[in-house]
Amino acid sequence: MSDSGDFLHKTHVVLFPSAGMGHLTPFLRLAALLVSQNHCPLTLTLITTHPTVSLAESSLITRFLSAFPDRVTELDFHLLPLDPSTAKSTDPFFVRFEAIRRSAYLLTPLLSSLSPPPSAIIFDISLISPVILAVESLPFHLPAYVLVTTSARMLSLFASYHKLASSLTELTDDGVLEIPGISPPISKSSIPPLLLNPNSFFSSLFLDDGPKLKNLNGILINSFEELEAEALGALNGGKVTTADGLPPIFSVGPFVPCEFEKLQGDVGDGDRLKRWLDEQPDGSVVYVSFGSRTALSTKQIGEVGEGLVRSGVRFLWVVKEKLVDREEEDEGNLIKVKGTGVVVRRWVEQGEILGHKAVGGFVSHCGWNSVVEAVWNGVRVLAWPLNGDQKVNAEVVVRSGVGIWDKTWGWGGGDRIVVKGQMIADKIRELMESEDPRVEAERVGVEAKRATGAGGGREKMFKQLIENWKKQH
Ligand code: UDP
Ligand code: UDP
Image (cartoon, rainbow, N blue to C red; front, top):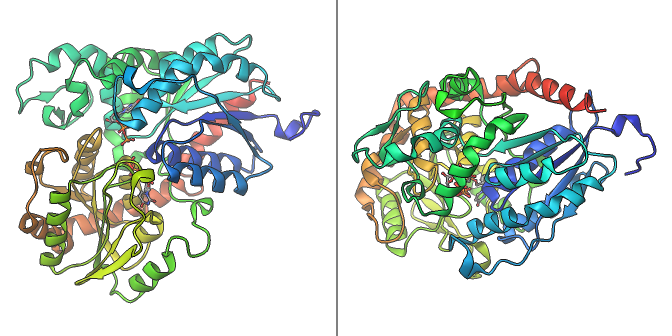
């Protein structure tokens, strides 16, 4: 892009996602929404770190950049080497979070040399303290925003953690964490396990970064009023007093799959899946997936298979055995039919599946993007949270009425509980047969469309943000 006084293209926003599809995808969806704002043409710089942790990330970045060649420039950020043995976590995605944090001070000269000068930077919630430092060292003022890739409910915990961490240890296992304005309170058993371990990477990240939220110019979140009215209201209205005063929260969700995400040609065997779905009765299929980075144990996979077959419900099940897709074995037979369903061992276009009229239910780990995509499509959810923020998100699923959750299933993985096939079968039947979640999911789906339509919540938020960014000039 030229910088020769092209007035229209002067508003220039820098986006800096962190590692993992659960973080990258919402950033790129936000980017696509920003460049399609026709009342103010924006240009974007996307900061990436290569090689990406997963193959899915590099493939998505390539598709995104080729969809917007004139409006988006990639800035490849070279990280300092990080010896994984000195990292606080062994999870490769969290090791990358840490590597980015340690290298973030190198951003200052890069941001200084951008042309035209940036009007704002929006970065991942996992990068707050170090990116704020880099931005404050610039020779000019650069408004700084984060994009929250989890629920507003989880954000309330993030914002309050530094004040509540000491009282967490005193809570009994069936206790609840009182955050003013957040009702019902978050159960101790829903708190991400890493936040209960004071030595974990996440505890220190939350302790360091929670108090810095107030230094930001705003917080963007992939949620919307009708899904999380209470939490958003409490955060924006200053009720979450444990949070030290927050900047304005812009609920710009729900983010939904975009054109650029489509896999090219038949790589995804997408056509085969689509043909199979086309043959199933409306609302009859349950889609089963635990997101981009959650592998079930072999034992648990066996029980899920058993449960699906026993349920008698038609199913489309994405099986994942490794945390990082690079390690997944290249299986010749990627799609196979089993009883009343289909088993897939590869990346699928989840948005297309959830939007298909044959799909009526979703067994989900409650990664926040998955929850939002289900809600958008009016698909009810059987919550099966397995790690991280997923139980807090499952609380949102239940609270909003769009799904059900059996809390006795506990956290997944490792040597923890293996949920038996019969229990899974019973719950799947309950999900598909009960009336309430079906009706509520449809209702919230309609609200989701309203939030993103003309005159809806998102339009107002974007107008406000873009006005603020224009003032920079
Ligand atoms: N996803 C997909 N196909 C897959 C697996 C995941 O399209 O085979 C997408 C899903 O639609 C969502 C994202 O990857 O947008 C996963 O994010 P989420 O927050 O749901 O969970 P995470 O993967 O971070 O645990
Ligand atoms: N998390 C968060 N802020 C961060 C990074 C992570 O709130 O800066 C939370 C996240 O919501 C979850 C936990 O930390 O509770 C584990 O990380 P994460 O969920 O990001 O992993 P992923 O979504 O990629 O599976």
